Image (cartoon, rainbow, N blue to C red):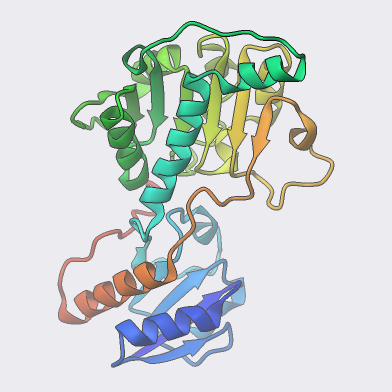
Length: 305
């Protein structure tokens, strides 16, 4: 059995980890590797697939697969498997809790008061009366919604299809999206990027948020209309935006987000794939493919996830 790893960085680390979990395989690295049975990739060059005519399955090292699906040479008859967690869920929970608590405890207001030399205590409030909205209730978004609920926040979740999560008020469909937006003091986005979700947070939908809400994007930059978000921030309807992902990465040096007082930027680090965990998952799924067993995380190209 031959497995090829083609990533933009740390290929040697992936090879060592996968060799440990899948010792029966011959592991190759790079875009010019010999034809293999399985490929493990992250942002491979388009010409990579022309060199791999016998693939049985293709593994993406990220939760999102939109960039792979956009490659014209991607073999459409080969199962594409996304990462279902690989250590990312805990990191997403940490990021989400950080933002929710920062907003709930009014830390930005206290920071502004300190800068102005003002002693300005505010009244206490309860987490149960503070709604956090979660758009996208898949593996990562669902785990975040559960964690926020367990911590005592009122959580409203939205997904395209109906879902039930204990402790979370769930909605679906266009009317359900409007209902979640209208309640969300903090709005967390975990949606996949598909033709249905690009710029889903446009001017009209941002206007449905409560005045002074915070917007958090941990999914894909293309889900937000940047011009609309900046306009909402400029007029104060959206108080703050916490952005980890962008339509163009790295974020261009002249982008307004860098210096906008209401924007907090992190460089696509909200949840990083753990090499050891991901390699163990890939090894297990390759063995399942070889044994003819069911494999989780196979992407439906029609849905985009």
